[in-house]
Length: 441
Image (cartoon, rainbow, N blue to C red; front, side, top):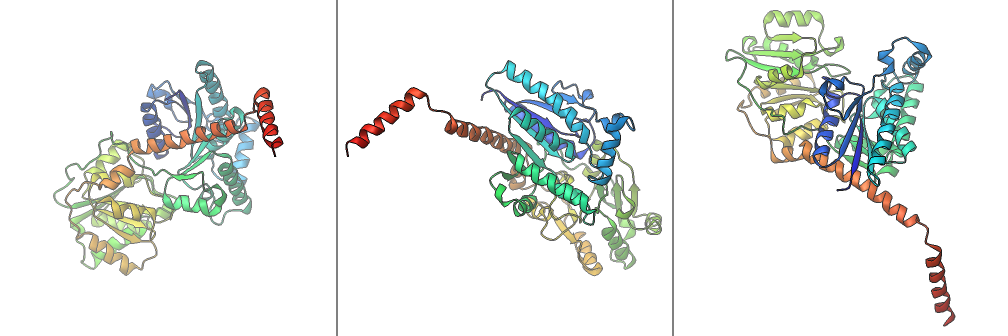
């Protein structure tokens, strides 16, 4: 293929331990193997990776705290209109750095193609791509790992909702293509922007097949371990499941000595039952809490050596947590607290692993029955289905992204050909032929 530069804006990126960096990292890896020249612009500490194609652009808001009018202006924007949003001024810095790289690349490779890819959140990546695409006249792709409008609380100030709505509309209209990471997220975008149906596509989150993830020997032969690894925040609560465990143990339907629940990762206060409940559960011996972040490899080993895996996504009808793809490849039973007919439930239904769903709107008695039934599932390790392996494999997904990028340039080139002026001599000759034909009648 001809030379093709992929400019990737990813605020989070390895080696930073943030789930938001995994998806752009997989795309960059496999696009590079397909012949693309990838340049990644990130706010993460990418200089330690040793990759000369990753450019760390420090975020002025975090690097120069409380210094200068620019910092105060961004602080006001984040407080009044875009609560907690990152990368607002960073977007201008990243855009300027990427623009220099694009121009140098074009000088060295005349006639090459350039595509910009921005993965959201945070908002700064979209702002950088939108601005750079307009400046350089190249197509850009908006990758929504989360729906943009959901960044605003349902009962947020009207000015915040209006700001996010306006930004979302501008991004969808300005991008050459829009990527949603679940079928439900695509449906939501189509309902709001039916005129953009031709540019909205789905590329799910997934996994790198070269990262070997599978079951490890179980942690204990004396009791069965159920683990959740990852942060609990913004509605991702473990309370309904923990409260069900307490009721089942109290009723004698589940032995306290036979099961251990491990929650690993930062947890907001409203994501767990009250402190009295937690103290009692730990005293009874069936609950372990590690309420701070641990390295990803350590968290993964805990999941791999567990008998059961706990998935918590009761707050969203559109998103699938990234750990689901690790859990399925481990191949042990998954208990999922989700919304009815959510993307997570649809993935589990076809993934080939044993699972049970607990729904956020169920009665406590129904939750208890579902949890008790879950513990009757066989615990033998299983392999994911062929559908799962193909749909969520990062190599396949990079090929999907390649097809999107190529189509953007092919369409632009066809449009340019249609608008190209006809040479004067050719135009006169065609006019003369038409006049002669008409004069015969």
